[in-house]
Length: 131
Image 1: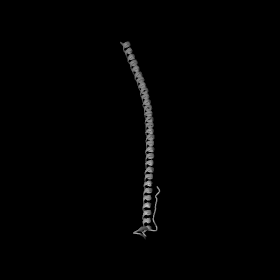
Image 2: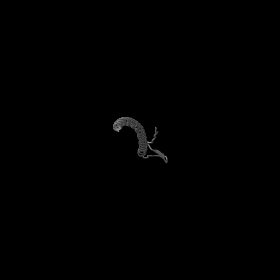
Image 3: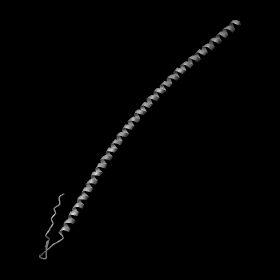
């Protein structure tokens, strides 16, 4: 703001005669006081500006951190889904191998039983023929 400053340089009347006062000293003190006040105001404005800048930076950091966390969560979810798909595919392949292996084992077992039954039948027929 503006400050009106009026200083008497010639001195003031005291007791009917001119009594020079130390106007220069009063002027210096007043100017020094005004400068101090202006400095305090400037320092306060600077502090407020700095605080506002820091708050803006903090908010920007919080927002970027939130975005980064969201990206990480999305990436983790995609990785988990890919892992689950891969695991399901591996389990399906193992199950198919087990089913195929059981079919082969059953077929081999059936073939052995057939051979054993035929051998037993032949043996029985030979004993019947001999008797």
